[in-house]
Length: 168
Image (cartoon, rainbow, N blue to C red; front, side, top):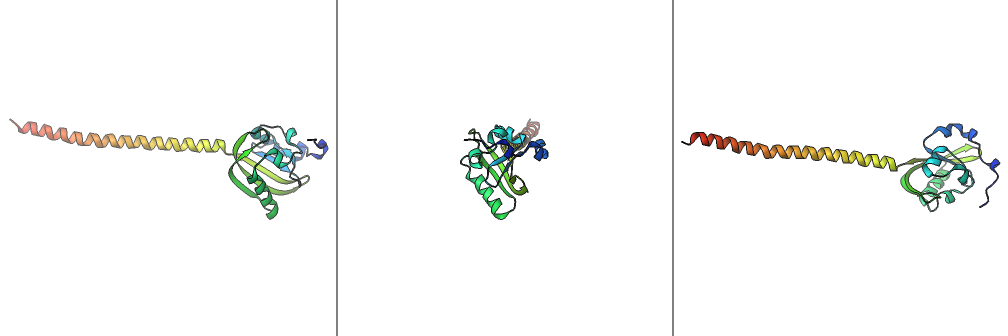
């Protein structure tokens, strides 16, 4: 596919504040073509901004109907729209779980801001926290079980000792 001249794309200076975000941000024009991708997007999606500039959203994220529906919803209602925890496949066939916020803006040449938060790391952290809580609950259960076993045995031992003293 032939790339349009680079003069049509937003210069990094136009969106200098986005350069420093760890969050992946992609800006689209009215035709749903990429006009800007910040370094966070390059890292998350493992693709350079130069490679996706000028490509349509469907080329960058092929087969991702959830994302396309979120974009259309945000445009139709002229308000931000967030889609939570869905799987996205990139141009390079990388799949990852993300939450995406689509925000209509009036920043020439961009008309849409797509903000992606990678969920894989957050899901892994949440899973590890659940496992830690489960391990702590299991340890407490074993302590209680050991206590319950020792108590009756102690009572039996004490009764045996009393009986032993009563017998000649």
